[in-house]
Image (cartoon, rainbow, N blue to C red; front, side, top):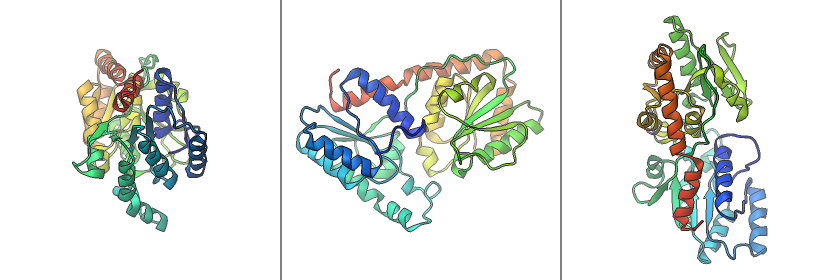
Length: 339
């Protein structure tokens, strides 16, 4: 329910990897785009008789509400006996810290969110979510949800320089709920305490942290291979999200990207992301205050190479155990499609 050819950002990273893996396992048709493009695509697909012979449909919702054409198409598929698995990737409309009600359109979006999700549920065989917490936030305990977190690509083989001292954050440098301001202050505190640490923030254009920037802060635009090129100087990756109702149940796509980078991870104690790092023993979990993150940075900065390598190896191992291929297999298993 969104374009997939407009850069490598959270949702498109997910669906691009899934499309690649699914196409290796089954014959795959893709319909994508904003509402107008999607309406035309679904109409052509239906009129062309391509619903006949389909073994299953996997849907990825967007933050925007589904169009009437989406619901009608899925209802027709269900009437023809085609199983439908709908993945609801977020619920920002339910959380004011992520979804400000500053305009009439956004207020309407928040008001219509639950009815729209109920409509998707009615035309789906099963619903999927990135976490159980998000499923409960939308439907309470009444939904039989399939949990499909983000996946990881294969580990990136980029050795860490012996002099690496940069922490890497990939995300919105302005949104308070992403935590960049707290992170910048944490680096200041760590440096005041004698740690030789620096920070790189990689954001989409227009989402860079406001300047001016200290010399130790590098703010860049980039994605994919451009981020890989930064890794030699990176000693650890960071997700500095503050604790909150949404952040506690969210599973950031970048969390699994970070595993593939093969660097120790420093994450705040938001429930879902902290559980992944603790289970993998892939780094350090701290509180969300700048002082607490600074303590974590000091721990990583003072760790010996053996400890850094162990965290890195554990991150890569967790990446392999959560590959996009396994996520694609889960989708097909849920839809009961044989490969």
